Image (cartoon, rainbow, N blue to C red; front, side):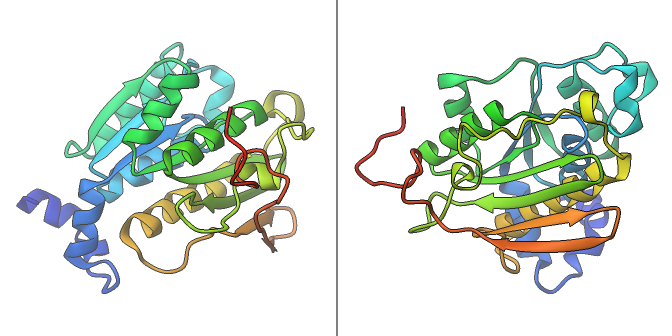
Length: 253
């Protein structure tokens, strides 16, 4: 790290649990963020500011006026711009030391698996169940740590999965592929700070898991009710019937 980086990250380097060693781990890390909307905005901005060395930003959507209420990586001048490209510009303006790869299209099938394989950690910031299941499957196949979250209305939740752990659960242990959980902001609405709460916690969880600080959320789902400022913790174990991780004799399609 050069002098500029040492000054930029000085307040977190002061933390004894992190120190220069932890900062260097962040600097060497490769993180894939899928979705640069309400959740992806704070995730990308915080990880860029924290000094994660390489960020891959993937989103095929463009910035719309209705996004600006909650997607703080984008500005009015970004209307019509690809969200991954817009978020990359915001990060570069804040921290030029981060290497950023922009993927302005939807990652699917072999491309998704390849992108997850190249990453040390994947963050799912998408807004639909089909994408979450595909990302979960790719991370399980590639043995890549996954941090996932969701927010709608006044509520949100966050958890993490690590396919490298014996008997650890995956996303489809929580929400099977046939679950009816697709709620959209355009149809159901969302209060803007809730995506900031959940997205910021996803960034924090990523930093913890990349540096080995604290205890991860693997095996735990945290639910937040913004209307009543209440947290609820759910323990999650591997489902014996999960088609992704439940049976060693089953293969992932």
